[in-house]
Image (tube, rainbow, N blue to C red; front, side, top):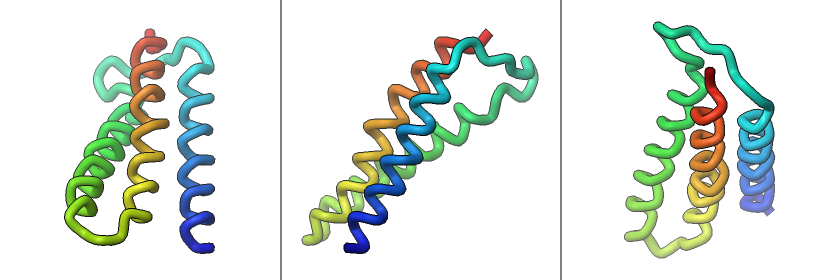
Length: 85
């Protein structure tokens, strides 16, 4: 049961980020940037590290949460950066 709650929350966050990345042109600071893409890159890197670490453990159910985040955050980051002015 706890895995379904975690997967549901991860999917909801990923879907929200994907929908917000498609929301049109984003105005960002030329110096700092939007900071959303930085958070997405950090989440992608942490998810990849978690997948590598959890591949060597026996519990394969714990691989699903980082995979959900990678599946949603990678296209979200691409769409967000392509729509930034």
